[in-house]
Structure formats: structure tokens, C-alpha cells
Image (cartoon, rainbow, N blue to C red; front, side, top):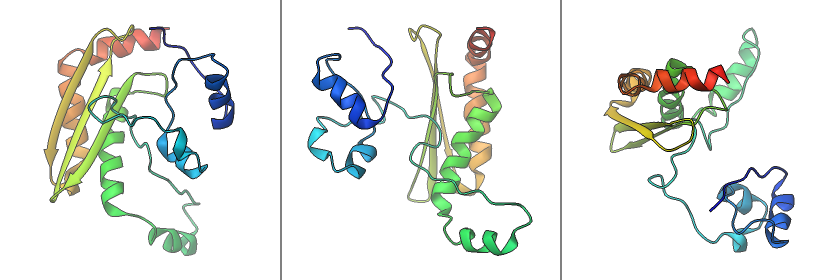
Length: 167
């Protein structure tokens, strides 16, 4: 099996699959559904198979810090559980100084009032994977993210990250 990058919009990627350039491709199911292409979905990857990058699926809205009227309007759109989950995930990235080119994943979910966060980082060649997890109260989201990041650091994540930043 050979893994290759695939760029372009959904239709371009699907055409390359149809043309035989790839045996299979991985796309976000949400994007295929939004485009009315659910018939193209052959399988869904579970969280155990493919932990997503931090913040995947969450939308963010920004506004000027001095625009109180707009802040009030968009404040009502904030979904607190999603905000808490993304806060935990992003804290892992912040503490590890991971960027978009770093094989770092973090995923949080709130179930029955408990926020559970899991994260991983892969070695440069993807041969080894470090994993960490922690859970606690949703209002402790950033602290949970810090604990998970610290677990990864104790396993050697900083050394791996330095190798990525050196390139």
C-alpha cells in the first residue's frame, strides 16, 4: 500500500478516484453529505481507527473585540459543550506547539457530564504512536488538555516535535 497526498475540491478528488489514479481516498463524510454525495460513502472511520485533528467539525466565529453588539449576537450561537471539547483539544496543541504539519490529533467528547479527551502524536515516519487520555469535569477542559499534553511530553513527544520543526 502506498499513501499519497490528494489535493483539490471534492469533485476533483472523486474524479481522480474514478479515473483510477487511486484505489481509495479518504474524505470527510460531512462534506460529501453537504454536496449530496452520500451514495459515494463506502465506509466511516471510527475514532479508534483515525483520531481527528483538534477542532475538526467545529465552527468558529470571530469579531472585533470592541464590537459588543456583534459579540452579544454571536454569543447566543456558542454551544457550550462543543466549546469545552474544542478548548481541551486546542490546549493539547498549544502546549505541544503543534501545527498543521504535525501528526498530532486530539478528540474530546462529553458523555453523562464527563469530558473525555484522548490525543496522540505519531513519529516522523508514522511508525510509532504515543497516546494519552484523561477525563474530568467539562469546566476543567483546558486543565484536562494540559494533563494529556503532559502525558505525551513524558512519553517523549517534545523530542518528536523538535524533529518536525527542524525540517
